Image (cartoon, rainbow, N blue to C red; front, side):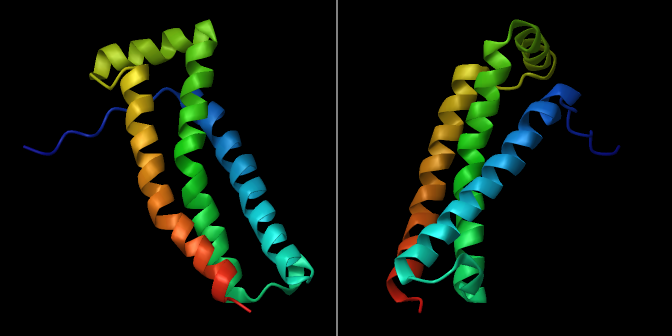
Length: 127
């Protein structure tokens, strides 16, 4: 009597979400580091380790829910991908598009409530 493995998502989810997560996450991190460096009048390479790590992690965590929402929207907007996603939802009783987007929006608000104060503190107190 083992625990059942969670249902596997179709590979197309990975093909859509991974590039969004990597490209968008990298852009978010680099943009936030560049903004911090510009506010201090230094080059981005001169940002100290601790502020850089705090800003990088905050940017990544802040980017994840919008990335997933964008990925869901892409899967929903392209008919062949939508059929795959809807089939997965039917087979595994997963949340439908609107419910998933609503849950991700709540997650985004929660992430923002945690990460935005960290970002503000780094901008306010880091050297």
